[in-house]
Length: 88
Image 1 (cartoon, helix red, strand yellow):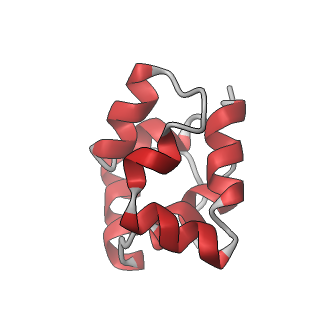
Image 2 (image 1 turned 135 degrees about the vertical axis):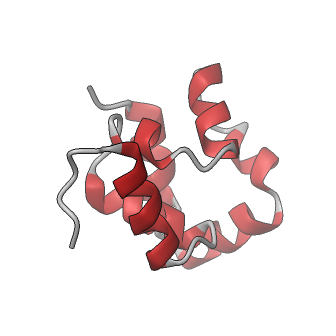
Image 3 (image 1 turned 120 degrees about the vertical axis):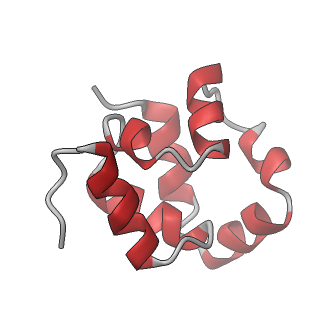
């Protein structure tokens, strides 16, 4: 099941200025979205597996890049989670 507000957040962060603001003031940006407590915790914990179940794979990968996670770490976390997302 996808999460509209999580998807909206990740989509909005594609704008370079939005990504920069997110990295500088994460809490301020997150406050603009109606995110469930467990989603906020997953974001704070970089829980790739949890978030992968709720958002489009493209947006998920882009988000973690914006958040500063390297591609190698993202792939490792994805593999650890047992997510059914296609790696590539």
